[in-house]
Length: 130
Image 1 (cartoon, rainbow, N blue to C red):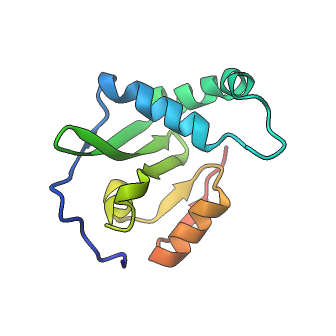
Image 2 (spheres, rainbow, N blue to C red):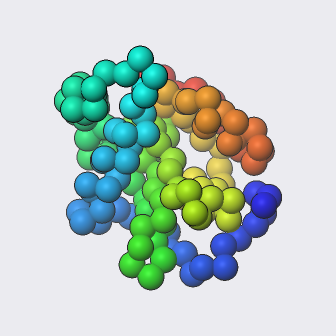
């Protein structure tokens, strides 16, 4: 699918609610966990959970929801996008683009997968200062 593709699902983009926090927090910490030569999960979560909590609480989080099911989210930390996530079964339908809002973005600690995703979809971004 292309960047112009849209989901057939009715998808609402809305601010994160307190009930969404655990999903957003756990997913963000887990996606950024390096699995090769890895630190054990519990240790990784202790080391980096505070940073992720700061991104969520001091920044802005928007979620994509359909029929009460969270499909994805974007975490915009105070200095830039720290996380964009869409559940695997819903990727390719433009949900990530809708979460970003269509403007050029600053990316905080961009991953190789972020860079590939932006390149494939023509999203202009720059590296944010930490």
